Length: 237
Length: 236
Image (cartoon, rainbow over the protein chains, first blue to last red):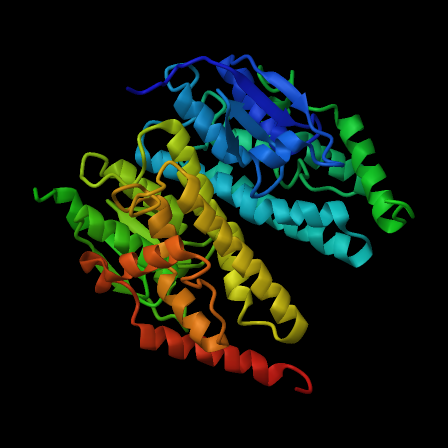
């Protein structure tokens, strides 16, 4: 029989500053699920990480009753389904609305994030291009917020409550703001993207988010340090 | 099979050779859903395509009761959910198995296929690297077939075709013909017996034979792509 609502042992393997880990922590916080957070250093990758995510060897990994689930948005959907009877619901009821939620979550991962990664690693002209591409993608999201009947006029992409798209994009919030600070660029201009800007401010302050979202200054510092080491990598590694 | 009024409002925009369009056609065929197949010119994007998929401007585009969807695996999950009571089920019931299905479907899209399509682009040392990467990805799928909850079963989905089978089945003809074009075995029956058997089984499934793209057409298309790349490479 379905095991929705089952409790059992929940562990999350991750790092506090990883935006992908933040996504999962938000989902767990919203559902009120207790878990053990296992800090993964990534350098070197722990035995637990390699064993539980042999294909990608990446965080986050959710380990529920000993079984690992990998890939942040797959984990979020898993949390929604395994604790389907626990409010709030992170996905809409209607199949079409669910497809739209998955579409925009995939957009964040497949289109937006590669550009943000480009900002993270880029210098000079490459950085400029990555910023421009990121802005183009943010503008598409702004337009969706303005015109798509699923989202227009609502507090969140998920309606009155945080949903899948909010988690997919919102989980990256500190990372996005940290990137802006560390590279001295503007990714979400409140004048050009008023809805997205307001949504992000609202998201930062929301229950379930504010407790797990990294401090932007710390995020920016981490990004700056990493960027510096990319330009002049350490001699011993 | 009950006639559903809704089904007359199902349309699919694409072309037969596309592995991603093929995925959707497979799902519709398995579920026995009638639809209008609107043929799109692969060389010339139509107004309909640009208007209905402004974000990605790609096929397949799926229409149901006037609503539009794009991105093949998202369409697959939609078909499963919108026609949930229509057998067969394309997704498992248990949340953990569903997560695994999504994981491997994503693996096909994010790791396997990029490494496979990349094989058309390279030669020499870079080609060797690309081949190695593709082979490693196929090995991971072999391992999944061997060890997952569907080990010993006919399909990734168990006894019946599921999401992962469709995700990999869409590009199947391309994979087999790419092997011919670059003259390298990607799925060696000796090294990857389960995957090899799966490919044969999938290709021979009656319902699917008429849907899978024409192998000669795909071979010609991939050969032309490869020839174009080779002609632009410096000093061979």
